[in-house]
Length: 148
Image 1 (cartoon, one colour):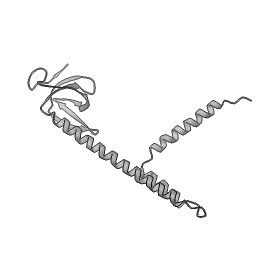
Image 2 (cartoon, rainbow, N blue to C red):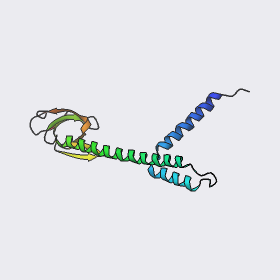
Image 3 (tube, rainbow, N blue to C red):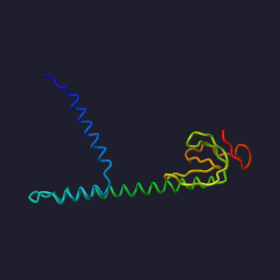
């Protein structure tokens, strides 16, 4: 009888991939709940080794530390981007809106949307990363905006 071993391997890889995806979704709270459940349900005749427990606690601290570091770096990046964007208020810029419309003019104000600075030129808005050029004067003369 012929069996296709390749399909079994790809099935295992698919299961491993799904498991890896689920593990990436585990946050600190879920990890702590899993660890507490593991401690509560361990075999009293064969309890967890102290070394294993210390290792898991170290992993928890590492995860928490990485989470805090990520949040801090995101806040620093937003602050830096806001400083850059606010420095463009009153300056003439040229760039693209989200829908690809070319806009140039003086930046009136800066807001934050989805954690990213958005520059406003009249009734048009563009992200800081969509700025193509900082101009000496806006296209079309001082204080005017143009759309090409």
